[in-house]
Length: 65
Image (cartoon, rainbow, N blue to C red):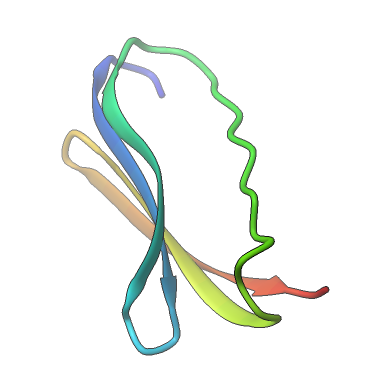
C-alpha cells in the first residue's frame, strides 16, 4: 500500500457468506504478505476483498485440494 490506512482483507464463498477475515487493522505504508489457512474450506470458487482507505478491490480465486 502506498499510504498507511485501516485495511481489511476478507474471503467470501460464492453465496456471499464471509468465510475468513485475514486482516482487519491499521497498517503503515508498505508491502505485505498474508498466509491463508484454508484447511476448513472445501474446494471451489471464493472471492477475496481488499479494502484500504478509499481503495476497494474484489478478486476471484479457485481453491483446489
